[in-house]
Length: 111
Length: 114
Image (cartoon, rainbow over all chains, first blue to last red; front, side, top):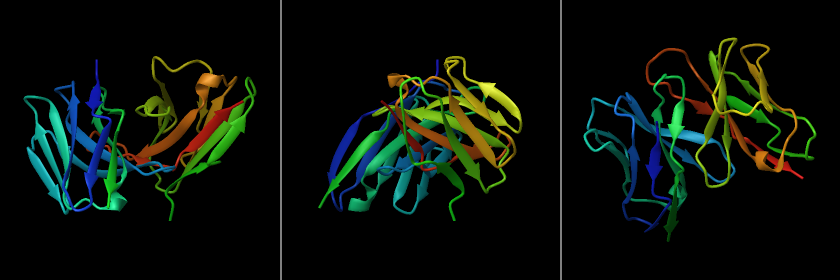
């Protein structure tokens, strides 16, 4: 079945880079996503990558996709305290109708 | 400028007392979703509407129902809430098509069951 796995916690210092990792099971996934959830709020799309791409960069965010290993990562450069949140990796389900989310990685940034 | 609005933000109900959560959108998207998110868990899709077509996930309990009277509004009805239904309920919308399927989420309704 479809499944998405993430490590649960990551702690970094302000100014360092953060790397959040994710593995997924459905090799036919066409799009993979990163969402951010701040305390008490809904999910906000950060970025997404199409499966025929290896890398996508958007300002401080870099997404790397390794289709062979079904591994997705999100790198946040120059991490700020405002980046503290839960980050969810997601893939589209096989029917293409919804998203399958991981449990989320809580990023804690200390100054 | 909120695009997906959920009301209320916090809802307290009693065990077994029916409750309705609401979601409205200004995006005119065809597709609306309801997710359940328990503490430290992934959001889990309960069901979605494609226009008026209702699509229930296979493992969504019968206790959960939904209504979509028009494009802008969608409701989640929990007929007899149990303690295990305490969670954050997230509404999302997306435009139709088989492309990137970006979903836009509301801020969620946190449901407590006493």
